Length: 247
Image (cartoon, rainbow, N blue to C red; front, side, top):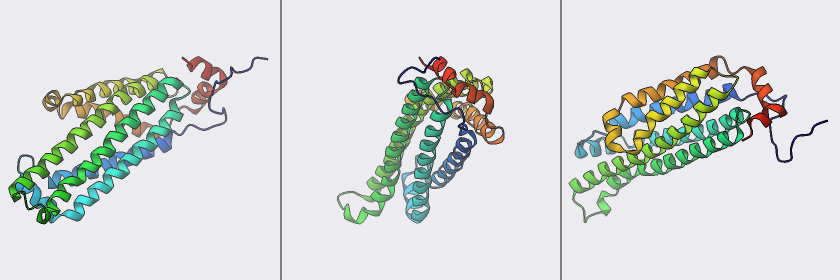
């Protein structure tokens, strides 16, 4: 009787794929990301430092609500990362692990970005203690810090672009999800990579982000509505499937 090689790991054959739970957390990430964009879009006016400062100070509690959305969004992405690792590990364990690492790097960049998100309000609220600066200078600084927050957020999104490339590859190689979704995710990942180069990203926005969003939305809805083909997932998750998936 053949035995599995030492160090070979695979999910238990009787286990269930965490597909719908992953879809649920992905949906929550979409909702909180939408909330963050709505809040920020209503407060930050591009190119108008005075109006932006006035909006932020007048709606400080709403601004802090945006930070709450930001942190919950990051937590949802971390959860999805862990669940996707378990879901796609039977397809190719090493690629799934690399994808998880890239996603966590994106989450780390998003966490740094969330800290920068708070700095415009802190600078404006501390204006009485910053007497060396004129009000106009503090307003310009607050707007500059918000732009720095966006740059950090774009770096995180670029990491997610690499992540979607790998997840798309795993979906395409899997036997339990439609291959077309893998193609959409890989194409969407490519569309997110220009965020590493702001001039190019500015010329492609919002079309590249809309294409990237298409694959994510399709996968989320499919996971929620249909899940995965459990029989085929278990077949790939079994000892022989795990051996085939090994590099």
